[in-house]
Length: 112
Image (cartoon, rainbow, N blue to C red; front, side, top):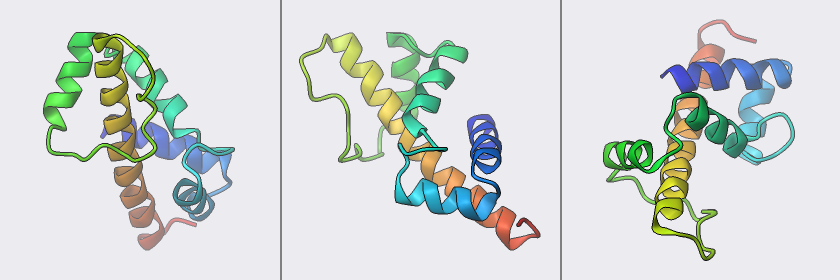
């Protein structure tokens, strides 16, 4: 939830309101003013999850989530790097879904 709150605030500010933020998040999560994967990368660093143990923690929590089709992992990497990328991608997908929900609630209960 902490990541959703931070990400929501960030994209609301960058996109001049919750309505624009929600539209851009859905249209292009990697696009201008959103940059979902960049946020996930930074969040992993800030929360000290950018290592195999942190990645395993995220993957264990999200074990039943499907891997996003736009996954960035299908290049030659070590097992540790693959785990980290899977964790970040799974986390980014969950972050996007939960942020959309939060923005919808903001709009429904008096946001702009």
